[in-house]
Each structure stands twice: as structure tokens, then as C-alpha cells.
Length: 357
Ligand code: GAF
Image (cartoon, rainbow, N blue to C red):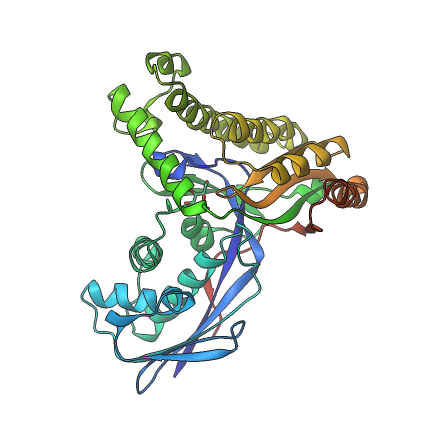
């Protein structure tokens, strides 16, 4: 018997670097995703359609570095959590761009976790699917991510953004149909990758934790009055914390506007989020800033980097009739700046992880 699950990549509409601060985020699932096929076998094996080969491993305790850890990581986590995990063969096939900040890795671990849960008759609930997927990425792969990507991949709904509250890991779908308002979400992959992403990400986490410690709160979520931040005499810590506190407020404001059906009015909040990530959190790079600025100049109602930063993608909310012009404006601006050609596509809020067969 074999079981197939599909789990999507994501973009985050707003709410960046808030997840590991017990904050708020508003992602939606992409149509692009990973399909995982799991079957019992004579030995543990991982196959990736994109890598084009199969890797057999003697035991889950000896996973080689690289993509195999994502594919067999959930099996190791399940075994470490006390489940009986017989030898399995897991195959993945993904169309989420890798290294673009669109959660290609969450798509892998979430689709595999779902497939193994069904194959092994574990019937994991929503909380356990999340815990196993996160542990595969945090503990087996060793990426210190905050849970946004797995939550978005597992729980997103077609035609909705997902309001995620990392204080208690609760989620609430909020209707989001930009096409009904004459708008599109344009995703521009800058194709820029920074060499020190992991170290910079960990440094941002450490700064936020230190700011919370100095303020005497459990997490920056507990800071509701930005004036409190004046108590931080370290300029860097104050700016890092200010981003997180103001970003939570922007998520709340965007959700209010979406509920009122005023999608275009969210644009300036998206652009403010980008400015905060550029000036206070310092996770943008020149290609991200150039893309965001150019898209707004070309008619987007707002634009911001999405994901962890230091490269990857910008999203923009663009009126239908400006999509072609905005796309070519970014291509021209990148060429003029001596950057490689960006890749643009429109994103449709899609379904979260689900079983295929
Ligand atoms: C990356 C991480 F994986 C997420 O957990 C989140 O922190 C995001 O960066 C920034 O919002 O995607």
C-alpha cells in the first residue's frame, strides 16, 4: 500500500519575524506544493524527483546531510516520539521554487508527515502534524525556524489568508479574494540568495529574546505600547523590538481591512512592513528594496519582502491592469542595476496539506 499527500509552499502577506516572538502572521498557501508518496519497504529510502535519484539509509539515526533529512526527518521524529516506524520508502516531487523563501522545505516535511501518519495508521491530529513537521525541520535538519511555514502549509484554506497566533498556535482563516477586487498578488523572486542567512536569522532571534529579557516580559508579544521600548538603551535591540511590536499591529490592521472588504487599503501597510524590515530589522538586501520600490512606482498599491529575507521574494498587491507593466518595470530596473533577471508569477490563495490517494 502507498499513500500520497500534497502540501503547499506559502507566501506571507504580512507578519514577518513575529512567529518566534509569540506574535501574529497572515500567510496563504501557494498552488505550488510538494507531493509525497510513502510506502512500507525492505529498508529506509528517500527519492526526490528533482534530484533524480534514490538514497537508501541503514537507519534513521544516520541520515546524511541535505535533502534526505527533510524527506526522512519526519520518520525519525515519529520514531523518537515512540511510534513504531517500520522501514519506509518516501518519494517527493515538488514544484515550489527552492531557495526563494517560499517554504519549499515546509512543503516537503508537511507532505511527508501527513503521508506517514496515514500509512502507519497514526491518525495524527492538527497539533501533532504541526509538532512533527516542525521538529523535522528544527531538530533533524537543524534549521531554527519559528513555525510560520509549517502552520501555513498545514492549515491554509483555499481563498483565504490564515491568521496565525503564535502565542497559542491558533489559526483563523480570513477570506481573501483579490481577484474579486480587481487586484492580484504578484510574487517577484529576486533570485538573490544571501550566504549567511542561517546566522543572520539566529542573530535576529537572539536580539528579540534579549530585548524581551531586558523589558522583563516573556516575549515581545507582551509589549503592546511601543513607548515601552524607550526603556531599551541599546539602539539595535530597540529597533529590532520596534519592528516586531509594530508588525503585530500591522497584521491586526490588515485583518480589519480584509474583513471590511477594503483590500486596496492594505497596500500602505504592506509597504510600511517592508520599510520596517529594511530599516529596523535589517533583513532586506538591495534587490528586495529595488523590487519593492519599483513595483509601487509601477502602480502596485503596496509591496514588501516575504519570508525570512536576505534575498528571496517580494510580493505586491497590484491592480489587474498594472500587472504586466509592473512585471516589466522590475525586469528593466534589475537589468539597469546589473542584477540577474527576476522571475514573477501571480499567486492564488490555495488549499493547505491534504491526502491525495
Ligand atoms: C522564515 C522562517 F522559517 C519562519 O519561521 C519565519 O520566521 C520567517 O522566516 C520570517 O517571518 O521563513
